Picture 1 (cartoon, rainbow, N blue to C red):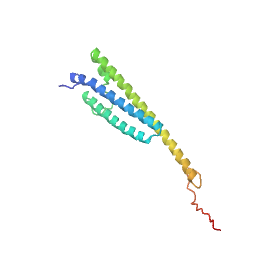
Picture 2: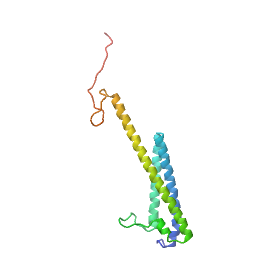
Picture 3: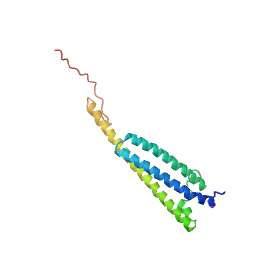
Picture 4: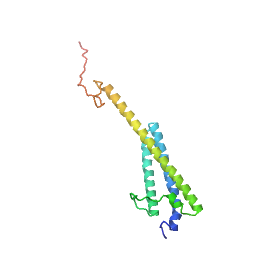
Length: 171
């Protein structure tokens, strides 16, 4: 059995591998959507669950990409200055029915990869906004609870003198 780029074994396995990669990206996208929803409703348990699922799906995609690299006999890591053949480029070398199937799968995968990237960017921005909001709330709360009620030059609540208060109600 040969697994060289021109070997029939690779061409038999490639469509199935692309299907698995598409499914893995769809699952990853589902976890990202759950994460985005959990952020929107401030569901910390949902965020934790989504992060765990995202990590699992990202690892699955990484394993499938390693499998793709092995199947196509590519180096384990991209070599700078040496472009790698894309699935689309490889598909163009195949006969019509096989080429059409591979091109459709490659296009579907490309669209899913881009959707995953966009969702990750949205989540990153939403997380940053929530973090900034929480920092602002903490500053406001600290200012209200401090005796001085003032901010220092660094935007932090400046520590005031210790105030000891008491009321003598016996006299």
